[in-house]
Image 1 (spheres, rainbow, N blue to C red):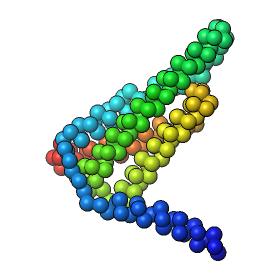
Image 2 (cartoon, rainbow, N blue to C red; image 1 turned 30 degrees about the horizontal axis):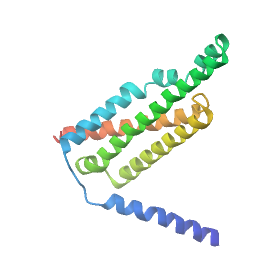
Image 3 (tube, rainbow, N blue to C red; image 1 turned 90 degrees about the vertical axis):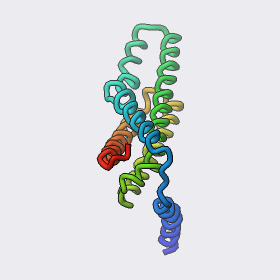
Length: 180
């Protein structure tokens, strides 16, 4: 019984701030610039960062197998260091673009697209999941290297694709209403 009460108390503590964040008055600052930045971030994510071919190439284990079988240990180590640097750069760039999209949704989209409370909460959960996945991926890359985090890469790209789809729909709603 005490565990149930503690669980409910923790749940209320977590839902209380979410409720107030969702109910705050809308703010629209620099609408055209915010929309343009969201379009750039969306385009960058969909065209440069999330295509399966690019993600697969960054985290391709067959590259490591090739380098391992035909080169010295020193070259293998250099290869691993460079691939880790590239993978970490990819994660940081994805995170920056996601934060840009989140800012768009917080500042303009919720006002102009008139999203429902459930849509806003779902989107907030998607952003939280995605940013958490980016952090987890970065940690996994540092601990296990660029070839030991395939599941987190898949989770991150799937969550980013969902956020991109939602942003595309929101931008479409805003354009139909003549906001841009």
